[in-house]
Image 1 (tube, rainbow, N blue to C red):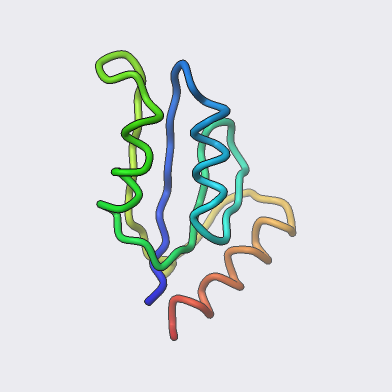
Image 2: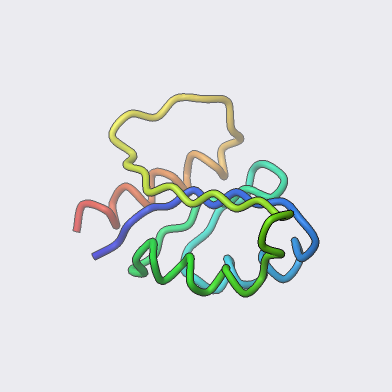
Length: 92
């Protein structure tokens, strides 16, 4: 079952975190250090993989599971196309 997560981070190892996040599944990046990720992973699996990439106590990491039931905003067409494609995955 697919789930959608927002992953936001800042800190010492941003490049390492970015590459790890991209390996989780389909991803979209519109803001610096923030990704939407559609994956079959659980939030705990994501956290476990990212824990080793952050400096505990100084870096920041936020992982949120989200739905796409109601979406609004100002994105380019690529962003909205990605979101609409993920809506189909989430319905399966």
